[in-house]
Image (cartoon, rainbow, N blue to C red; front, side, top):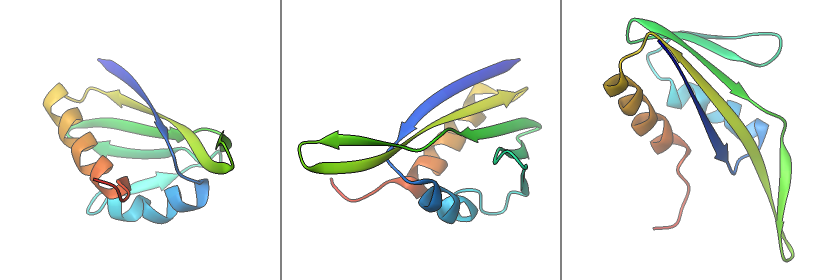
Length: 96
């Protein structure tokens, strides 16, 4: 079974890859020549594909934005939820 999830993240490419080892701690992964992240997870395969960075402008504020596509192959739903809980915690920024 293949599940594809898209997430828009307010982060630059540089910060995304800087935090990646923390988000995927204790998980071996490879980054391909086209910057896709491939790993084995929960008995299946996971591919993380960050898109092109663009800017979102709100008045005079400009924020970096990435569309990140997660493709889960043969991974149970509970494990996908657990992955996103842990992954999101790493990339969570200030606020409340």
